[in-house]
Structures are given as C-alpha cells and as structure tokens.
Length: 338
View (tube, rainbow, N blue to C red):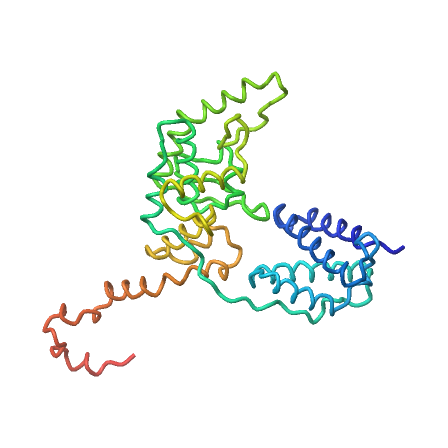
C-alpha cells in the first residue's frame, strides 16, 4: 500500500512525539517546516497536493532547490539549517518505513551558518525596563515578577508560562523548570526576583485569582495552580508575556524591534559570563544539552579574562612588584624554567 506524504507526515510526527525525543514546540516546528516543504514540492511536481504525492515524488534535487528557495525568501542561515534538518529527519523516517528505496536527502549537508552575537540588553536598560513598571497595582506586581524572573533565571518564555506556584522554592531560592524534552533543572534566584515574586503572590495573584472564581458559573474551573495569571484568572499565555515586555520597552523609551523575552535570556547569560561565571555553570542554568550552544555568549569573555589576568597574575602590573623592574630576582628564579 502506498501512503501519501500527508499520511506519512502524520506518522512521522506521532513517532517523534511518542518517543519523547523532542519537545512539543519542536514537534510543532517540524510540522510547520514539512508543511512548507510540501507546499514548495507541490510546485516542483506540477501542482500535486501532499495528499496526492507519494514518498517517491521527493527527489534529491528538490531538497537542494528548497534550500535555494529558503535563501531567496531571506531566511537566516540558522533557520534554513533547521528546516533542512527537519526534511532530512523526515527522509530518514521514509527510508526506515520502506517508503523509499534510497534516502533522497543523502548527500544533502547542513547549511553552514554564520556565527552571530545575540542581541542583549545592557544592565542599565534592564533597570530602566523594570523601573517603569507601576508595582502599586496587581498587574504591575505580576509584570515585575515576570521580567525579574525572565532576566533573573534566564528562562525561555515557554518555560515561564508553564510555571506553577509550587515550582518556586523560597527556602532555598530556586525555581524548578521543565525545559525542552521534559528535562528538569533547578535555577537559583536572586533577591530581587524573590522579592518581586513574593510581592506578586502576596498582593497581586490573589486579586487575579479572584477573577477566576467569579466565572465558575460559566464553567471556568482552575484545574492547576499556575504561577502567572491573566486578567480573567487563567494561565498567562506566551503571547501575553510577549506583550508585557513590549509594553514596558515602549514606556522605557527603548526600540522593541528585534527584542523579545528571549533577549532577557541572552542578557542573563551574557551578564553572568561577563561577571565571572564559568561556561559550564551557565550551560546548566540555561538548560542547554550541549555546551556548543552556550558558547555563542563567549564574545564577552576576552575582556573578562584580561581583567582576571590583571587582577591575579603577579607580573601583570610590574610597578606593583617589589623593586619595580624585577631586577631583585635570585639566581634560582632567573634560571628557573617550566
């Protein structure tokens, strides 16, 4: 029996969902990437729709052309690489299923991506953004806690949206985070984030939770205890969190273009490294499975390393040494080699 590409796509998504090797967000990205590839393929196969195309309709040349097409659509190198990776994974699945005799993606390498420096807020900009929040209102207390937590713990926006009240350990000062691939990690929280959370939970969240209770007659039942609530008392969405930051960027007089909650995550990592944190610790706090991902932030390290050298090495400042010129060394010191 010959299955259509649409059926095979659904089987592929089910397989990676059941195996739990990828997060829900990644599965959704795979679905969108394959949908885009099928739309492109439709034009290459004289208008066939995915439900009428078989796996054998995919040819190696199509994948190369798809890469060129993505480039002409002004996609960034990293995005093109990800989309091609999705197509290659799907083609490997087709090969395992016996839908094709030979993998059509064999020989299609990853597109080389140019390294880039992520946009970050300066320390002063972070202070300005949080400083314009009116923390005298329940929503202001919530928004302050959101931004303090995004910056103070380097959370992904999806991770923050999923937090429940019980995920904050105030006695130890940690937040328990469920990251990509359902990997759990614990991230320390600073005093400012803990204070903002405490104020929100004490005088902000109860007000918003009361909004939910007034709607129980309409079938609105709070099944869980989400940390951050919207105006109606429900769990705050990712989209709403984006709007929160956008609002305060404008109030702080900062250009919101190209800046998102993820910029706060980039700032968290950059400021930690520039302040002396080691790369491995930052990797653990960010929840990166590979340290290579964390290395994009090492652009801040040369100056920090120079400062560490200046502060620690005995010969970094010759004038501070006894004798100034260093001429007072013993014969054994002059002759020592390592």
